[in-house]
Image (cartoon, rainbow, N blue to C red; front, side, top):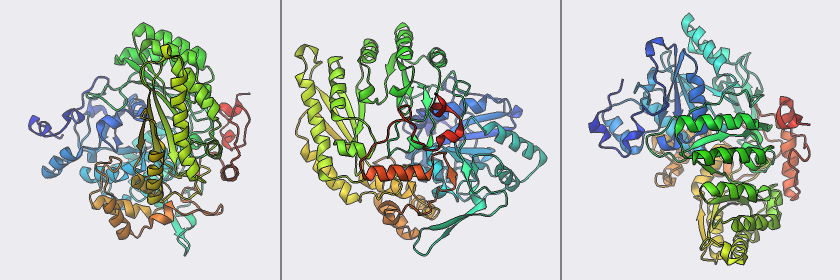
Length: 613
């Protein structure tokens, strides 16, 4: 056990990140435990504690009497410095045990720019970075989450990837491991056995073969049981899926410090840039009464004063109106605020807004994504400027005066007119506010326009598209800033350099693992934090690993190119994505799933929205 003295804790910022023992955290007798599982989030405590998937799997695994799931986060730089000086190994929150002593270390992959933190955590734990170097007494390293759908950039470091939703197969995996452990079987035998479990990808049993031009020739299985296609796992019935009735309450304020209610998985909309909208298909909803039951239990067990509705497109929930009415009634009784996520303006209910604001006002968040109708058609946003302005008018008349708008720069086919279109749309929204009756205005309008840089992702219709260069993004930031004239509009933009690197890793093959490894050796960690990101070190890592950023980020792919992720089967077919890609080039839209089935392939799971009618 690692002894965390007061002397150490007094030297670091936010010492509560490291002490554990929070309300609703688990504490188990280690002598009664067969399997120790470290749930590892490759970022700081307050970021990881906001993550719903961690809360679900933490409680899911701990419901087993033979398993103790403990949490571990990336120590901040001040704590890491002390740990390295004092040779303190990376430890768990619950028991302060060295992570190296666990059976499994499970990383959730939420963002490509956290990958150097994964290597740093393994290094701090004293676990060999490369899967091939691990011995029998080292933990099995598993990774899952949305970024696991292109596993190759981390393939040399991870023992196996879990592709899909964690509640489905972890019991089977842990039962298998327990039996193998009791029989004294080797880690290689266990990894071989995983090849027979749906959704498991064990990279050491595959290799990538490349053509002379650097593209992939084939993914070659090296074991007779290694499948050529790894099919993702999805929960068939969302009402029966495990969901915790409590959450661990962090000692310090988390990024999202509230009860989170997951309403459904998947998305009907089919935005062409959105990876989550493709990999989580088909849409599967939880019923209204099940959701209200969870809301009541979670509020009672946590004491939070805010509840957040979490789904990719919350306003598409089938029973939104009756559910919202009953939730508002419950929250009013408990004096709890409801936090609405980014909503589609066309589906916005002024009635719901009015009811939510009765408890407490917060800012409204909309994501038009593009400033002109042509670009919204290219990305399949299926919303008009008239609908956006009408939605804003409803919101302003409902008493709102703080609005956040999210857009993307660098979308495929974007022109200077499309960039300026973002400013024009924002100005139109300002005019809409000042055109309403003065008695209904709540002071001056506060409008925040935020732009992120488009990153082409695996399993989207834009996976073949080139990304803008860093220089092009910076030019567009300047162009947009100049085009915004109203003082009511504040403009924020995402860093272009990290977005280019994100694209390199998001569409990377196994050779990109060398880039991540070299960047880690040069001291790159917390790359998603602007104050820690060091572009020069990444450029040096690219030189050392012989990875050309332009090859991965800025190159248009042909439709017949073999992708690093082609062995992963998400249900949605490549033919559908090609059809959508071609429609994007013609600025032709596709209706959402409930209006008309577009034959994406997700119906093969025999569940959800595909079978509603």
